[in-house]
Length: 370
Ligand SMILES: [Zn+2]
Ligand SMILES: [Zn+2]
Image 1 (cartoon, rainbow, N blue to C red):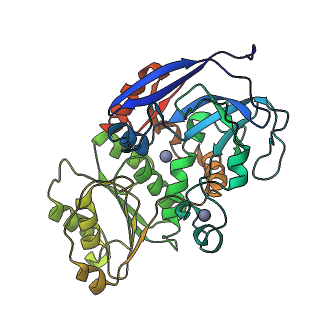
Image 2: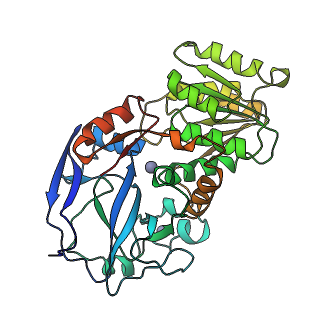
């Protein structure tokens, strides 16, 4: 047993809507692993979904969470402490890291360059073989964590606080929406004012959007969107009629043509219908809201044909976006109120409350601070 460190404290989903925080004995750090102390973990919408609806084949206790910033505490003798640039890392370095779940060899991984759609959905056999078996299965809702062979490590810039760096993961997704805004001067409408919606707005601003419109709620979230530079916000609780929302958005665009780009980050089926109706002809519609099942909506496919709409969906993003996310967060932290995004902080004993705050939209972004 390692004497330098405390016990591991980790939270798990133990049943639908039920979490439990457990204390585990800290094992000796495996020779090929890196022990890190977690500074902050972001509560992701996916975590909320897993908590509410654990997969049918889930093995309880189920570790959750993937948005973590941690500090290197111990480096195993045979571990490879290198970041993605090949720089050697040391104890005390602050890192973000990603555990890829792709094989690297299949068609999706190697030729189509969408490794998150990997046909095998698992790391290569070489990496699996290198995984130390002695470690407890813990996720990001913990005070400690392990970097394992094959993990991608990104060093956090010194000047970037962990509370902002923790946005690197959702910003990675939002950066993907930015690829659909292929020029400056666009009218961009964003449906949804949660973290992905707000960060998509941020990316639209960085990309030189001419006008930005956010459709969402509650008021506190829209207020932050305005602080990020949203030109117009439409509160869905005040304007409850989808038809009315479509007309307002169109009226805010030149000749009532509709936005050039619409980003669906609400994760509400009706929003998809609204987006298709409000977007201008030959517009680009980005679907990044329905990460989890939310139901269905009736649409007329002819709308897509008639208006020549391009629809793009993203379920994840290229891992290298982490590099750009961290750079952007560091560079723009003083121009944009990025420090206001993590609005609620919880200890590991209050995971249940953190998930509830995220679920109810009380928090812009909830975070666990062990
Ligand atoms: Zn996430
Ligand atoms: Zn693959």
